[in-house]
Length: 120
Image: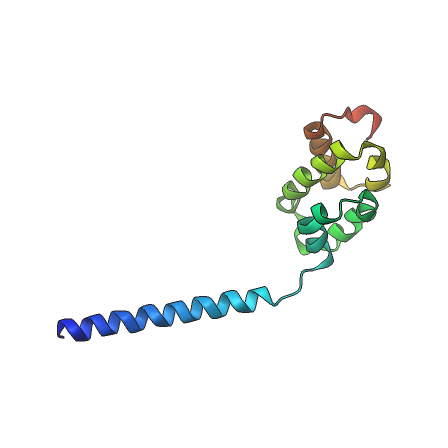
């Protein structure tokens, strides 16, 4: 294979990869966010704590809620919210948290610098 043919072959492969990556990225941008994801990712745009009432009900419906791996992102998120809105903690925490939620809430309260004794 000549140098020119080799160059053209590599160029065509590179262009195909660029087109495929661009098409994949464009397709991903058009997918709407689930309500939980939208709240989690855009809470800073409208940081009213009343929007988080029922947050754990939404999390329980997600497939990832059956294992611990789904909770660490919520821990950091809730720690920031709890620190900023201490008066809303009782309303955000579910009445009957499951074992994973108790662990996540305990970690969020600790990161927020709030005594767990009065909350859980």
